Image (tube, rainbow, N blue to C red):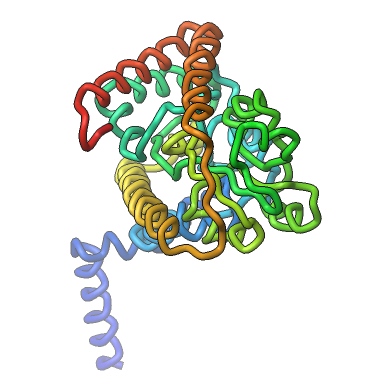
Length: 349
């Protein structure tokens, strides 16, 4: 009996000592119920493997059991067009998308995705947010929206048109072609007869194989090869309507408020990691696949027709600027930035 009491006494002292040890705190925290988030991205799984999965895996590993993000791809929980509403009402805790695709109800939503000729290279996006004030404008716009918090915007790939059966060698060749694409670029290109068509992301390849779609105006070469669209399309138009897509991360404001500061910082840091990975993946792939890719024949527009498109974009910019004072501020930044890049010359322009 005395031996048993002695053991219990030693065990009790050991437990007390452990509880007092600084090493005990992480153990106890890890045993509490983790914060659970549901995040849906605009992208399908093949693309999501690059544009967001590495980030979510890194966050979940580094969160040490305190928080876990469940990742869902395009249309898995809610239709893409309902992403914003679902984020706002708490069905989703977070979203990765551009504003235009997710039907964000802010006056700058037209700039999300591909805004014609707003960018030449992917770093243009980050530069305009860091140096020219787009971050403040995005923050201002979403501060006016209930229960949605804008977190960060980064760059994706340039916009090219890929077609299945008929090449585009002139503006006239665009007429009547039904393409899957993002809203703003689709609206701009429709003046040349291109017909934007919306289908679920996972149905795009089938729609091209069955003839429902004639092609896509959604991405660049890296993405077209990665997701399998280059296996269906036979032609690639090298003229890029814009150099980089604007994509953002958003959180449900109530969900975001419940996250402790150190996990907020971790999430923002992994978003930056995602921006870095994505930029390198796209940038390297675009050049390599144009030169070495064998799946699509490259075409281009005549210089005089391309000059017309560039000029038409300036008209489009002014039309969008007239829609709201805030939109006008964004367009003015685009103009200022473009002027600086042109004046700087090589390697910027």
